Length: 401
Image (cartoon, rainbow, N blue to C red; front, side):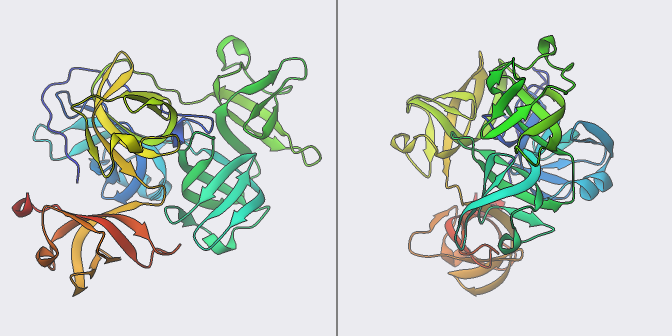
C-alpha cells in the first residue's frame, strides 16, 4: 500500500485540473503535497476498498471527514461513507498525512458522477466489453467496471444509470462504476462546444443542450461559453432528444500551479513527444532521470493509460516515475488466503493465476504462502472477475523489501 513520507506543510490543499470532455470527476488522480515534503494530500481516483477508504493505494481515515455528494454536504464520518459511496466511484479526497508516513486522514471526500441518464443505445457488445450511449456520452463497460443494481448482461436501452469513470482523448468514459437508478432528473458534466447564442444551445459530445430556460447565474458572466467546463441538470425532450437544462453550473475545475508531489492517472489526451504529453489535461514532462514502469518512453501515445508522479511546477508535472496501465487492468492487494499451487492462489477473495509472462517484484513464486501480503496487477478473464491473470506480483511485507 502506498505511503507518504511527510515533513512540513509547505502548500495549501490544491489540485490540478485533469479532465477532458466528460468532466473533471472522471479525469484521473492527484496526490498533491505528499511525498517530497508537505503534509497536505489531495487524491482523486477510484475507491478500491473501505476501511476507512482506500484511494490510489492510500488508506484514509474518514472518521471525521466531511462527505460531499453532488455538491451537497451530506454528513461526517465512516457511516456516511459506507452509506453513500461505493467501490469503483471516482472521488476527490482532501486531507493530511501522518508524520510517520504510514497513514492519511481525510478532511473531505467529494463525489460527483460523470453522467446520469437513460441508456439511449448499445452500439457494441461482446463477452467482456459493452459500449453504451448515455445522454450522448459513450460509456465503455468492461472488466474494470463495478456494477450496482444491475449486471453487465442485463443493462438495456432505456435503463437509467449513473456512471463514474475515467475519460480518454475522444471523450469516451471508461466506467469504473455504474449503478442502475430510477432518476427522472438527469445530469452530465463536460465542456461546452458548438455554442449557439441565438438558439441558446450547445453540445457536450453528441448531446445537444437547450439552455433557453436554464438558470445560468452560476457561470462567469451568467452565460455559457465554448470550452467552459459545466455541469448540466435537466430533463430530456422525448421528441428531439435534446437536454432541456434547468440549471447549469461550473464543473468542479481545480487548479494548482505548484505542488511538492503530484500523482496523475488517466489517459494520454495530447502527445507532443515522449518528453511532453498530456494526461487528462495535465501537461507532463519527462527527462533522462524519469523511471518508466511496465513500459518505455517509446510506448507513450494517444489513448495509453498512464500513472505519472512527480512535482508540479508552474502547472507542469515533472515526472519522476511513469507507470503504464492497460485499460482493462486492475490491482488487488491483500493477504494470501488459499493456495492451490504457486501459479494459482487466492488474495483476499480474488482467485489469481500466474503464467510464464508474470513478473515478480520483491520475491519469487516459492515465497507465496498463506498470510503473505501481495499486490497483484492483472487482467480479469471474464466480466465477473472469477480469475485474475497476474501481469505482476509484488510482495508487500517488510521481509521482502
